[in-house]
Length: 161
Image 1 (cartoon, rainbow, N blue to C red):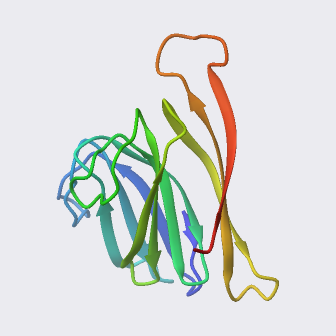
Image 2 (cartoon, rainbow, N blue to C red; image 1 turned 90 degrees about the horizontal axis):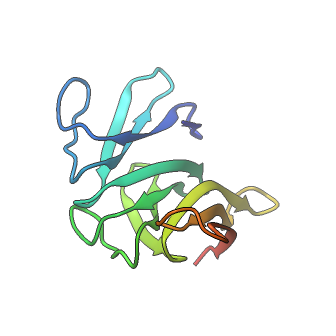
Image 3 (cartoon, one colour; image 1 turned 120 degrees about the vertical axis):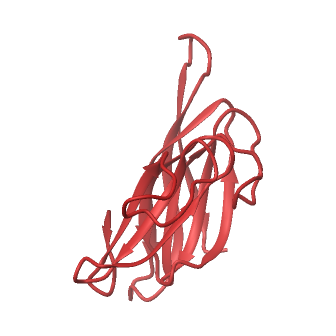
């Protein structure tokens, strides 16, 4: 959960549920990103599901100058509303949303095997009016049994383009 500029909050949830209860969006696969925007009074403004046919795990949310970045890992090929493919094992999957929850872009990154996103920060300009890039950190874990160099830690910088 992160605070939003309007005094509300953005919730990011790993969902394995279909419609029902308070959830108004359908899952695309085994597990999806479920994003819920609350207003300053805690009422739902909008909600979105993002995912493919496989298992997609949401890890982190960040506020940008124009909306939000949501990030995690994906084991899904292009399917559901996932527009980027799967290279190998588990890929990083980032989605940019504007403040109304409309998708701006999707990006996928692969460092081989099982890539795990642990943190994400948006780098803002000095006047805090624009986003200059995104700094991501995590590790790649070998899919097999424990072996030498089982985990490789990495950092990735993405510019505003």
